[in-house]
Length: 293
Image (cartoon, rainbow, N blue to C red; front, top):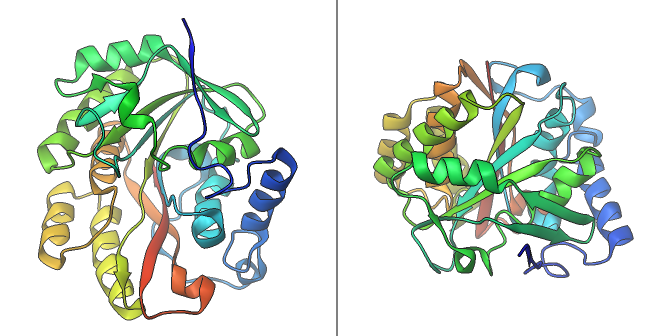
């Protein structure tokens, strides 16, 4: 029996009506902080090597409400929209914000519903990944309330008109060993797959600190990500106590991307909620990053 994972945050993090949702996503792309907005017409300082779209393996995207982080997320999705051939399978990883269910959890035999339609979970590939990894469980409950993957799907449906399937994974166990185990298992799976795959790590960065602190801490963490250095990444996380919620998802994707041949990473955009609202006393940091061969 095929189940349907219903939206948990439609009408909260993004509009629940199809037309309003499409308008909201379009606004993210043309927002002043977005990839097609006014600021995109001015050369932006960038970090890391500039990645060509055809060489992208993976990306990091934020997952706050679209009004806060959608413009930053749109940078990765704009880049991913240029991928040719387009990905057949998208493996999405994010944090388990509620601590529900298994420590590292995926799903089988289901669709994920959004206002733009349904997206199929690739159960065959999920089962292969579960067998390859020693820590990945099948647990629908772990996915029941979380927004971190749900908010990515309408963006994917907006840029891709073809059918694609997903492997959804949420983690509340996010240590370096978990990231290495899961990242290596994902790399093994992708290496054996005959079609194109895109990896997405869903994470926000520093939470509820002054704007200057968010820029300082996140800047150091992003440097480690761009260096594709997993040990340095976890060292910076601990040393600066960076409150990036999906740090294990980023770590696993770093491991997988490097195993799959990534030689560079590029920061497409960093901004905070304060850059959007003007209130810089207590902000959340957002980054769009891509990994490329």
